[in-house]
Every structure is written in structure tokens, then in C-alpha cells.
Image (cartoon, rainbow, N blue to C red; front, top):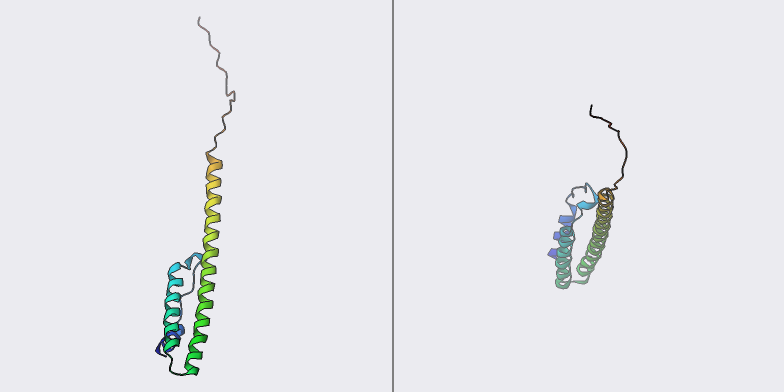
Length: 112
């Protein structure tokens, strides 16, 4: 039962707000995975059915958070890839040089 209580205490702590979509990291998903493993273990070791039920509910919430964090990370990663592709296309376009001849001036001279 200790795992469920520990999770509740940790989940009450304020989390810093994300400054950008790319702030979601794989590390955050890994931390959620660790909490999920701890909660599963606590659910297995729960001495009675109400405690086990409480741990199972906490486990479902954690899994939903992990899935949402992964979706956010994946979406941010795809957006970054799109931006990289756009920048590469822009650089490629700028590197294509066009040569053209244009008459700027005519110089005529003679020897006397």
C-alpha cells in the first residue's frame, strides 16, 4: 500500500509548467513508467481488496498520463521534424545559383 500513498504525495507536488511543446521529454515518460511499476507492485502487495482497487485506479491514471505525455512528445517531435525539413528546403532553394549575363557598360577606346 506504501506505493499508492507515495504516488499520491508525489502527485500533489506542483509541477513546473511546460514552456514549449518540446519541453516534454522521454525522461518524463520514463519517470511515469517507473511510477507505474511501483504502483503495480503495490497493487500486488495490497493486503485487502479496497487497497488493491485504489492502487488499480492510480495505475489507470498513471497509464493515461504516460500515454498523453507520449502523444505530446511525439507531436512535438513531428513538428520539429517538419520545421527541419522546411529549413533544409529553404537552404536548398537558396543554394541553387542562377547565372545570367547582363551588359553593364561599354568601354570604347582608341589609340592616337
